[in-house]
Image (cartoon, rainbow, N blue to C red):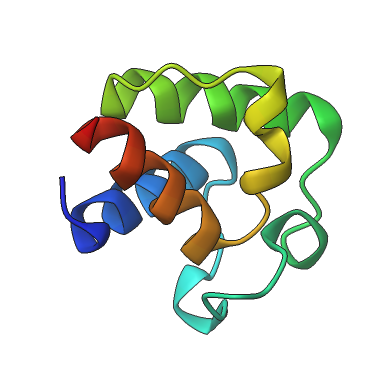
Length: 82
C-alpha cells in the first residue's frame, strides 16, 4: 500500500467518524484530534474503522502514531507493506 492510498483510507475513516469534517483544510501535520475535536470514544471508533478499512491491526501502543494525517498514513502504509 502506498502512502497516498493509506492517506485516503485515513481520511475515509475520519469522515465516517466525524461526518462533514473539512479534511481539505486540515494540514498533514496538524493533530486532527484537536482540530476536529475528536473525543476519546470517537478516536477509538476511528481506530476501529481504520483497522477495518485497511486490514491492519492497530493496538493501543500505536495510538501515539495516530495523531496526524501524515503519521497515521505512514503507520498504515508501513504495516500494510510488512
